[in-house]
Amino acid sequence: MSDLLQTTTGDLQVTNNALIIIEGITEIQQRVTQRLRTFYGEWFLNNTIGIKYFQEILKKSPNATLRDRIFKDEISGTPGIIGIESYLFAENRQARTGALTFRAKTISGNLEAEVTIP
Image (tube, rainbow, N blue to C red):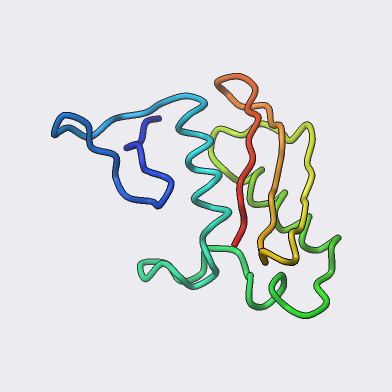
């Protein structure tokens, strides 16, 4: 597998007028981040993918168990992920964000990542 490197804002990374191709852990981490930041119905080519943020997570009293299951399923469903070894979700109510920290076993080795959730 391989992919094009993206910036933190989702734009393609261009260096010396060339796109950068990534593989391995870097690619898997980028794919996980993309999946966790995609809202349900957001992608016009397939409006059935994405996380149901408005329906399940960004509501007044979200179910923490359901939220964690949704995030874990999204991580586990990412191509290249074999299994999740650890998972922690920390909510920042003032900033209205969450930080998802996890460690996963992948086909390319171990991945430790933190993804900020809007």
